[in-house]
Image 1 (tube, rainbow, N blue to C red):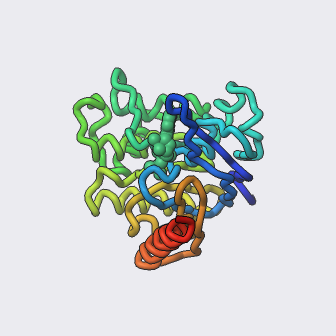
Image 2 (image 1 turned 60 degrees about the vertical axis):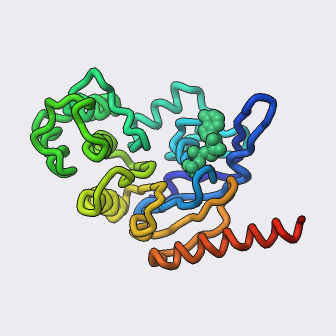
Length: 251
Ligand code: ADP
């Protein structure tokens, strides 16, 4: 099926007062069907911003992004929303569940936006898969962070999206529940027609991916294929040291 999302020369900056901060600096990456990709790097290195741009949630200042064959940088807002609804599942770092809806309604609504019919049983089955069986009538405010995170995953996959973007999807979970989430994401990518892009601080989680991208200061500075978690740690440390050395040479 080929490449599902491709970014070329993506740049993004934010204005803080009079100061322009470059958050993404000429990022190139692509993700193919059948792949699970992790993005790691220090806090503030631009991982979430990149994920939002790849998913068509934010528009870069420069560069190209093709998501499911659509040029989401130049597309109108409505067209971008359509691509997202039809093809993308997003697990937000802060879950972004709708507080006025029940857990079940949160899950079914996103599928309906995507044009998928999901029955009450489908919703219950999805919640069961993420270890939240029987919670369909609960309100998001009644959930712990870990529970909300799992509902957010159920919502993201309810429409059987072609590509799931997940921002720290195991951040609020213990090891057992984290593994439930990672197994679901891994299984999606193993299906060969879909892909998963995950931002994570958890190097064990990152190591479940086929490829791992290391970001630093808004750039992808390293890419590894099927690394062990220890290799990811070494790469992050090496990249950090290299930057410090370069900084010292410049000074
Ligand atoms: P990471 O996910 O690696 O922690 P982020 O992409 O969240 O990094 O953020 C990178 C930088 O961009 C940070 O310095 C952050 O403060 C800044 N940033 C992110 N989003 C915004 C925004 N909407 N407005 C202004 N600055 C932002």
